[in-house]
Length: 499
Ligand code: NAD
Image 1: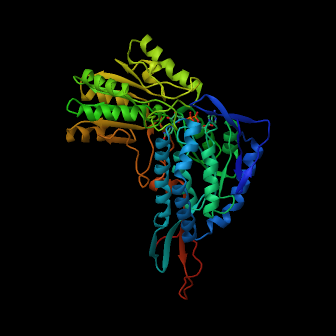
Image 2: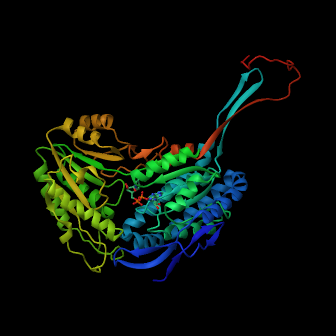
Image 3: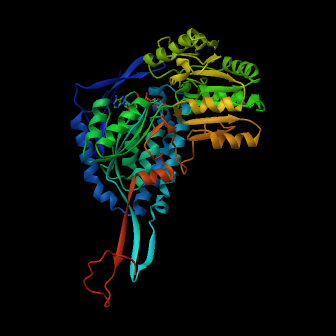
């Protein structure tokens, strides 16, 4: 054990109090590899104070100078993406190529933010009244914060901070305590890119750190990504404290397979989207809704593919899927295999006996698993499992499939597999889900669109990045101006109307 991860405040490392720390694990070995300081109110205060102090100068930094820092940061992140991917893999467990993928998707948001001046243009109306002009300007909010989940330690924070900082805000990030190192490396790269001290800060920790941020009067907006119960708590608490808030929650993503679909494409997609990153993706497919008569053939095709998947340590190039993030999470995920069978599902593939290549027996392993004949009342269907378990529900037609998807309390992502354009168009229109794929299993929007689900997958009305991100991190001021004119009309107590 050698690593000790500290906060990053005011442009430099900031040690926390020694009495509140958490362990960091390597999920492939099950060993503790370091510790991370947990912030309390004092460290949160220090971070928010640093961000508050940095705000006036950063807000008044010209758009072109801000953009120059963003371009430099983009280059550094790009150059260090392999290093970042290895840092992520060592603490999260995902394979290095997958971690590099999350850095690449995060970088797309930085690239989007490089062009933000275009989106920060207000409107201007000349002569709204005689010789009176009106215009709107978009201004940053001040100190904003994000609380992020373990499953994307780089990409999810990068949905938020490039846009927030490009808009002129200053930022405090509270990353997951399970894989905290990537956030600190990113902070170092921001400093190297020339970002002024205090514009980007990191505090680590648990509920105590989050609550201190939610209650801090100098924090103006909160972005959260994580599980639904915590998202709802964050939304309610932040709103009660007068903050702008977007809280993205959990998911149960369905993939509907119609009888006319290309079943090889659908099986490839189900396996890729179900087991990539060991199913620990908010856009992972977790429920396949097979419209009969395709289920038997589809299940056989999935089983063939799953048998060939190579499970092993994230830094072993042979591995396609790594371990789960903690031992407790692995045990919880595995418990759904038992409860599924108890409730009447069939265990078509048991991941507990899947071979692990080159891994330590103490690693948090669970191979890809498939539960067939699942029905909507079963807890393995109702709960978000967030692991390598795919469930197959068998339905008799499109209408029943749609009912299943729309009956779920979650509405993050979904996909339909079909060769019938009319059916796909109808699904896109009727489904109550925020992100929809047509023959695409993980429809994560590009940076210039916005990411977010519906129903219990998002509390608040702004999605992340894209124009909604810019909207979230700015407030509009409307100005009405009249410049000195010799023909002014004197005192007038009437309500201002146009003339
Ligand atoms: P989590 O909700 O346990 O934790 C998320 C963050 O909240 C962490 O930083 C954690 O420290 C903090 N936190 C945990 N408990 C808290 C509490 N009681 N009070 C205040 N803060 C608390 O989620 P996780 O296990 O890190 O991540 C997995 C979850 O995130 C899954 O449910 C997944 O679907 C979801 N997720 C959603 C999206 C999305 O876009 N909707 C994206 C990624 C992950």
